View (cartoon, rainbow, N blue to C red):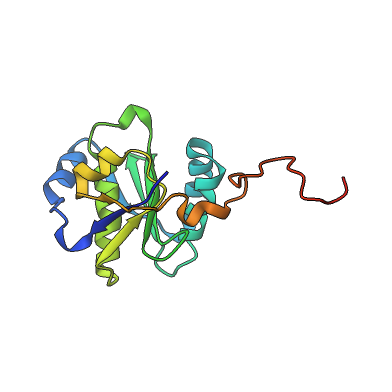
Length: 170
């Protein structure tokens, strides 16, 4: 998976899109400390251990760098930034039954707007999955030679894999 770059100085206005989601009972807002465990557990259940670890890191700041989407009182998505590295967006996920409503776009843009407010001019989207989504929403471009990027030494992704012989005694 490669990384992508986003110019934060040219982000679209999302106020009307947020209003329309609100009419459907969907809100996107920054997570707060008291909800850390609930949010991280939800991410672990719906997006896996790695995403949960990154989400957990996003709560180590005074103003958490995690946004959540809720439909009435049920969490349906999340997006983090500055979790694995400064100036990095991700991870992000929306439950499959809520995809196509614009929730992912709002989560992405809420996080990127916060990054811009924190002084960043560009953001890196790390280890991109749906490149077309990021191209369409924020005109992100692929960063040449960005594979494997920051995740090169991620446990479980090294080239040796489980059971590799490192010359030690077993």
